[in-house]
Image: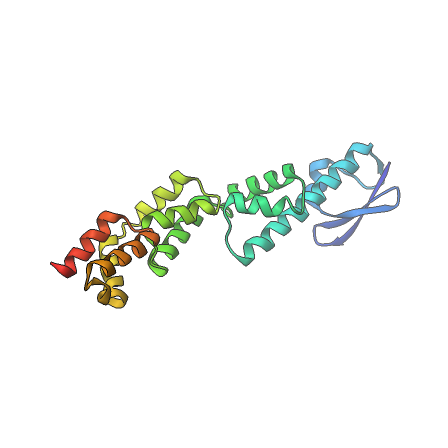
Length: 199
């Protein structure tokens, strides 16, 4: 199979196999494959070029996904395999992890800060929501605990702003406790915060 190359722009070349275009590639790719103009190469080289094209398209897709919002490694993989083969998706994610573009710890930390400080979620719910994004439970726990949030103070602030009237009687307090437990706060922290107001 005769491979011919034509320069398109700085460091980029259009590659043809027996006169049929197979794509545009960077000179680094051609150097890596040891491709020279007007030389015969075996069928395996066409497969290599096809694989490089697939990886390039998958990387572009991954970049588009990440430009929309950050993703965990697992989330990105699930989206990528809708557009490419599993092995290529794994390869692209490995490449992005090496360069720090995909970083589960950083992603989980940012998500934990948003859930706890902006959405006023408790520790338990924050950990649950982070793991739902495909983050390992140990990483989720670690990032939440690393935030050093005073959850008792956070509950006290929530009660002061929105729920003071729910402290008047036992039934109302019971409903408030249930509501705060659903938000992911620990019973001990809730109890301490409520006692601050009623003692």
